Image (cartoon, rainbow, N blue to C red; front, side, top):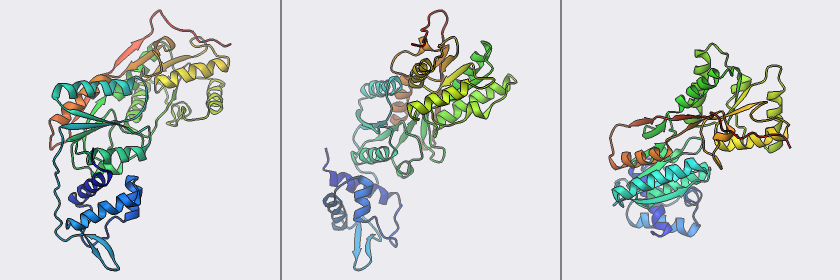
Length: 352
């Protein structure tokens, strides 16, 4: 494991090699190095001093530190035969992606470095920089919500898993999220449901927007209205428990309430089932639940009339294959989803 100052030094070299800092502009300050990389003042000073000693940076009295006119920068330091996986979340989706990445890395002889961003954009940015400093050959990223600045700066191969950043052209391997929304909604319409409400966890990512687009397209294809009060792209899972119950109560107290709740994942399915029971509703019976994916603390199929299943293991394996065969042109691979339906066996959630 490289010393922390050496990791920071390599990351600064990578930034310079990408041309992000011109010789006539002040370079990153010591304080900015501390804040950006989460290191101590001592570590920041050591990294900057080494770059000055190497002729990469120059200090000008009264003006600050600048990139040398012709810095001696190796834009491609020796890379390990390793890939990094930066991931967040919990449950079957995360576990399936990790298992897929691990199995393919083992087959191809790659070392795997695993970083958990814990759902934080700040921790994700830090993990991406750490992966670069570790000298990996490429990075697979299951991104958190929001836009990554570090992703724009990376000069090594990157594959985004299951969601992508539209303004950054990278390889991506995706589940067919449009089909999730379209096929699940079409199936529910076939069962007689015409009013459906959506419950979301994450909202600021392409996979969620594509699910919503598929849902709305299916409604239009069957001549049904897309009601903003039922399809609003707003988070449900991050609300406080009482706020979630109040929202469910308001939805189901309407003159024409939804007959099924489309939950964005299995964790929302189980939470909604419990809170509906607390409100006095039976599931199924008074209301049905459907899952846009089946990832949850346990199998959600007994609780749902239908649930989409994502090819998480194949997403991980395909990501490694893309990293192993870099391409100048970005590649997007979309994998099919499957729809699981409840036929005869189900779990009824009743009021206590």
